[in-house]
Image (cartoon, rainbow over the protein chains, first blue to last red):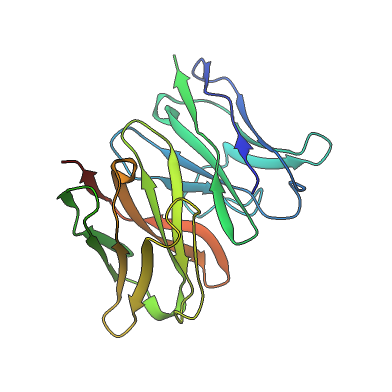
Length: 110
Length: 120
């Protein structure tokens, strides 16, 4: 099995841009798609990026996803930060009939 | 609109069993695979189990393999999780989640969750 490692927390000011990384421990990051989920306090998660870089309808284009095979990592970038973006963010991928989540990154917008 | 409503959570003693249900509506349930995901208090998300749309394939996390069973009834638009030999570490909010698309196993929509507490 592989692991997905995320930073525990990041913080940035409103209007700025933040990037959250997600590093895969084994196997190529490009082999299986990466998804990103947002979970606001007290709420269920919602998907914000699927298939590495696709945005579901209703997700603002301030959210973007990418992968970097050289670092074997995926990234979620949120531009024009708003206070409503403050939440926990989880990356997720798949391998060998296991669906794995990263440990989550708490984004603080202050 | 898509609705997923979990039920069946509660307080249960270690070693006992519990069955969770997830009622689906707003989409053609029989066309989509489904997942169970759990979240221990104050912790991150942990995938538990998946079942294909026709029920012919299912996979489990190592932590529950052999103790939990995922099933579905497409005639009733219902998803289930039978949990046996429960342990304290199974205490969590359990979510059911619908595949993003019929061919994409991403977690496209989540229910509100049901809390399972394993305690004597």
